[in-house]
Amino acid sequence: MPVSTRKNAMYNVAYRVFSVLLPLVTAPYLSRTVGTDGVGLYDYAWSISYMFCLVGMLGLENYGTRAIARVRDDRSALDRTFSEIWLMQLLVAGLTLTGYLVYACFIAGEEKLISLHLTMMSVSCLVNVDWCLMGLDRFKPIALRNTAVKLLAAGAVFIFVRSKEDLWIYAFVWSLATLLGCLSCWSSLKGLVRPVKVPFRSCLVHLAPCALLSISVIAVSVYRQMDKVMVGALAGMDENGLYGNAEKIIYCLSGFISAVGTVMLPKISALMRKGEMQRVKKHIQLSMELILCMVCAMAFGLAAVAIPFAPLFFGKSFARSGELMIPLAFTLVSIGFANVIRTQWILPGGKDHVFIASVCGGAVINLIANSLLIPPMGAMGAVIGTLMAEFSVPVTQWIFVRRELNYLPYLRTLATYSAIGVVMLLLVRLTAMLLPFGGWPSLMVQTAAGVIVYGALCLAYWILTGKKDILRQLKRS
Image (cartoon, one colour):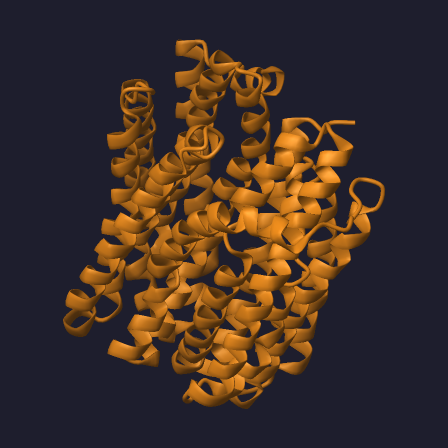
């Protein structure tokens, strides 16, 4: 039985957010336990490990999800497609795991011990079948099983990590949690899909298009993970620790955005296959309204409270992370805008070249900006490079699809919620100035004020424009 888009979104939000939220829950403890250089060292090692994982998965979250969604109503084709893609996955992930072991054993420097204990992340690429469950619109098992595993991992961190010398335990715990989460989802495939024997050459059919999409995935990692590698190498582990913690908050909030996009990809792929283009465009308009409302609230809200939040959450030694969060917060706007167009028009429509061009362009911009700005500016140079890269992506997408989609309504929507966000930011800052106390009580009052102001202004806007039934329309469409 198909699961509703709303329920899938709820499950996938839980899955995406918990993937980054639980490490974020442990971040204040870890920051105070290992310091800026310890956090920087871990982020440096994890970023390299994650890039190997991206190569190992070869863009399957996009390609695999779309391929399964297209054949999910034909059991024979579904079994065959799953088996071909998984065989290809075993081949690529196996080669990548070998490469990672060579790096960890013979190339890694001071991060060697951490890298070795992150090996299970690469092993998990062999058994990660989330792409199949997502293509089948089965987000519940992914969310529940991964959440349970990561809750246990978070508990283990508080019990076993006591000093900087225990940093390898932190790496081991989260690496093991990743592997166990992937293994636990296999039981959910029972009765839905069955591996069948397929000729080896059949898996090679998927290699080229999947590799094409992986170029874009790897390019995204260049300006979302390579940042930390470059900051660590060019500015030191202390600067990398400050940047890494600032980015953790952004990464957590962007989980909400990617969750909605991942849910919509199989749904829109199925609608396009049926030729229902008007319904597709209606979905894009409604999704854009919701996403832009959400990202403007997060971006302007975080910018309003970042300065007091960082030292309270991470510790006084991470106070400068708040300065980095303010400009980084606005990458959420470009991420949200680009995500809707990518997951609801570009990828379902098979316009992979547009996706690749946009993210590769962003990666090139980011590498150039980082190389020029990190040496003199440290972590703030990486922030500027990230801003330039993220905003280049939706601009490049528009260049390619401007004749197919009218962007003017989307830009008007963005301007409206940005204006509401500016009002919220100013009132939150004014509230902070008027409060006679500081610390967490002050931050909570500021946050509450921001939520009330933004919510009230949005509600007034929806009533005046007749848009108060957006959620119901999206559910029905």
